[in-house]
Amino acid sequence: MTHTRPHGAQSLRTLLQSPDPSARLRAALSAGTYPRPEYVEVLVEQCAVEPDFYVRDTLTWALTRHAAPATVDRVLRELTSQIPQARSQSLHTLSKFGDPRTWPAITTELLQDDDAEVARAAWRAAVAVVPPDGVAELAEVLATQFDRGDHDVQRSLSRALVDLGDPASDVVERAKAHPDTGVRRHAIATGRLIENPDEGFEAAVHEANRVLALLGAPEVRD
Image (cartoon, rainbow, N blue to C red; front, side, top):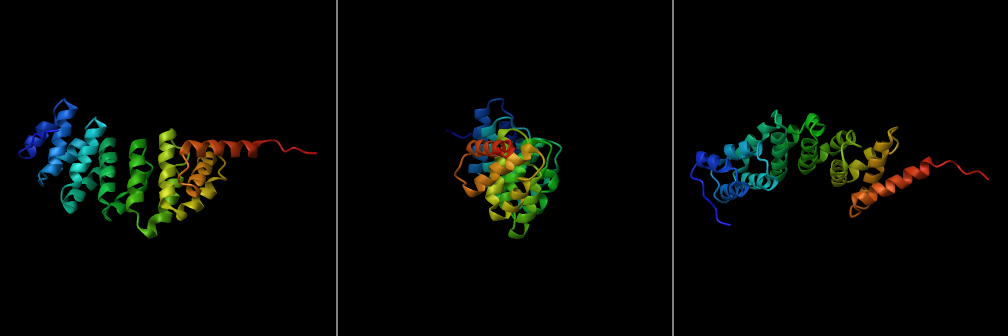
């Protein structure tokens, strides 16, 4: 793939406004291959509006090719954007940098964001940057999201809790006794994944349903 190399921020902005996603992809690749400080603002702006998944991912890669301190500072500002994609993509980008400054910026509001994609990105980013003394606190917040959303959202939450390791086990065990059946099911499935991380989420949910069915079965008396 040949790159149309931008010559300055305005040139990059023009290339990223092309209606052709392949052209935007080439522009993002070039911006990462030949990084320049003035590209950071343009790349961050495009992250908020870019409709193509592969181009967005390349924009993130391009940002990681730029000097971390200034780039992280600029990306952090997007966490308070009114545009959900700006928040989710900035969280995704920050998870790649792993900068310690990211942890205090990932608020409970982001972890419980009304937009599922923002919340999922926040879970992944938080797991990537949480310090050892923050793991238990993070696990408590993540546990409030049990039974949220569709299959993919629930799988993301389970994976985040699995990645936290042992500190997540206590909150998962407590959630297994929750009065809501959906929360119990998700917690049981997550507990299975903590014990066996290689088990697929669908298999864990299937087993959770079996456990719930057995618990709800009438007692057989002689």
